Amino acid sequence: MIVIGSKALTFRLQRTDEVVNRCLKADYDVLMSQDEFHKWYSLNRKYILKIYPTQLNKYKAVALKNEERKQYEIEIATEGSSAKLLLDNAEAVTDFVIDGFLDDQFATLTPEYQMLTKRSHLVYPVHFEKNMDDYNLLRKMANKSEHDGLMQEYYFLRSEEAKERYSKFKTPKLNVSNEDFFSSKLAVKNYFIHDDIHEVMKHHEKPVYEMMKKDFTMAKCEKDLFFELPYTYQLQAVQEEAYTIALERYIIPQAGEDWMDYFNCYKKALKRICTTLCSGWFRDFAIDNYEEAIHQYSSLFVDKFWSSYKSGKIKLIEGRELPRSSIYELDAHKMK
Image (cartoon, rainbow, N blue to C red):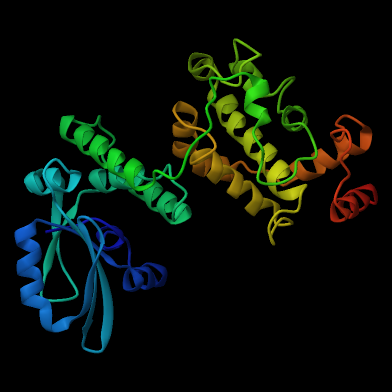
């Protein structure tokens, strides 16, 4: 049996109060063969309050022992599954054995395989912040060498399973004209043209995304042009998109209770970039450089926007009027 979730990670960390509390709260995410599952249940039946299927090959068990309650998320290995691949190669993919909550012990995945597990579903906006924190912790622990064939096979299988599990999440198609791409309705009312906000948020003489285009009539950007840019520009491409999305979808339309928390709006925009806003190489870059994009955040982006609006560099879409709170925001900026 192999434990793969937070329990497999936290035992490797220094025992700070935060880590201890996190470990106490964490479920046991466990991979078992069908035979192991039956043996585990028989051995621990006296502790199990309830157990029920959550998916075709997954079970949730709630156990009580010594007046303490814990939860197990159990994944049964089936033929051709990523779980079966790990169990069949346990010696290569695990490194320690830890005691469980009940009368059980589990092998723990190596940091490399834990990292791949996290990365396989990081493109979906479910528990994103926790998964991103775990992923970056594991990247620091993992061996930096190239992934071998077994790792690649595991990551492919795990990613395909995540794709099926989170099939409701879709990303927009970029290989379409600008007109078709921007004709899709936003979840909130837009007040400014998206590319006009980009123009205000630029770090250089033009927005970085324009340096990544060959055909300016199409929405897509070019991978080869992006990776020819200096790293600073690549990171700024992510930031400019995040600032633009934060303004367009949260701050200007006052969407959500925390729309005046600009840093949180920026983080929500980054989350969208890393998950459902786009796919492929740009999303991969944003995920792997998320920490640096957070570190390089500048709260001045909102002042920069209102200053540009006040000076007439950016104009409202014809027929639109700013929400009242946005007008107050502009007035506050004028008073500075």
